[in-house]
Image (cartoon, rainbow, N blue to C red):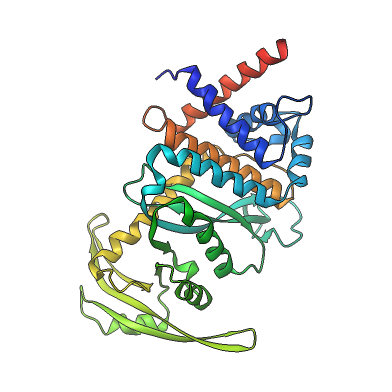
Length: 352
């Protein structure tokens, strides 16, 4: 399908504005701005290549990123979400959210607090890590990332999750539930979510206590138990509790197999029969990451803020496609069309 050039023009202006506002740049001046940087960024996204390889502006762009606080980047992304969210009345939605960690490969000497050590397999020596909060409600066109933040080695997961929650809450009418995978099952997070009255559903790892409870249950049985615990924090013992829902040998039509499930929640009104289908909304995350991988912007930089900017730029591209073009063209077609339009636009500007 042929896209009207006027639409690409407006979309590109949105990208220009995001880069300018995130990096505190001034458009229509002799200095470089989003108008100039978008060409290299889109080229790198289309080719899944290095910004340093595809263009000649990487040094200038990296200096611009280093000059601004990381908050500029995620706050400007929030504004873009709010603007595009008006297209499907995001502020009137009662949504389900999902938190997830995603990683970017690093090749080189691992140093500092922002690069997590890795095995060296396939020459990957480290990982940059980002925490992302997304909408996964079934009535949304696709999983939509609302905010992402870079996280350092030793960060407080509970603190980062609650902060992200507070930032995205004003974008929607209400948050019905927040979904977490087993990697988020921690006493600190449960306490923080309980104290803040945030609704959650966490996939519980099958530790010895959970295994023992499941062994005593019959096939297809479902039950709830109270899980009480103590957390030693800042030389203080804090007591907490949550409800653990156990579901024994539940048949899955898709795979034709039966599985045991365990979830932690503070929501008494959720029925046991709805736990599994509700949690499966979270699996839409994998679809979004596959889409974003088609626009992977690579860099040789060791600076977390630079890698974070590229990660968020990829999310802006995905957001624009989901909201404006998804029903007409594939994500890759959208990227190619936008890049070609940007190349023609900039060539005409240089010829003036």
